[in-house]
Length: 224
Image (cartoon, rainbow, N blue to C red):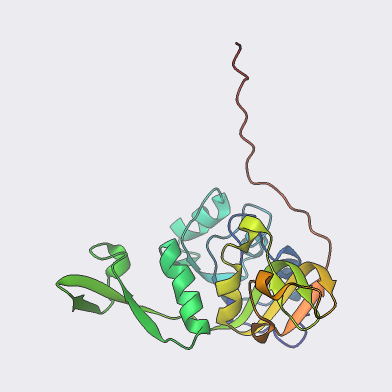
């Protein structure tokens, strides 16, 4: 699915939130390809040894554009040691940057981040007496996303919270490759249930997924 698309120094937009809805098969393929000096826009960078965390282990990522370092100790270590460049983005801003790029919008103004480090070096404009900062739309060389179902024309359905960053990430890629659990015939999906139209999708792969859970929280049952 990624044949002919990968190269050193490319910009990749990746869907998922934590380990929910991550394109794990495509990530494994990128690891196996050996491409390096990657810039990746994603809410976070997986966990140690899984998801995008695998690309950290192999030192294939040069820069992350993320909202959250999370429980990934290697992510934290590489960032604090200066091995990894990190551009922090608030989650809503990151999602809108991806969506905007996919809609042909080069930039937008937002109040989120005004007066913080997020605003450093960015253009400030006053609207109705309030400060807003300019954020640029994201257009990536490649988008990798995970969906639940696709028809053969690329229309996608995501399952519950696994939708998360996947639609805007898909929109932001010049080329979008999707991994799914099931591919169905055209016309099988209710048009009202399609979350992302096939116009954004270029390649589809079907496969088996591990579906890990980041944390399990348990509490002792209270006695009556």
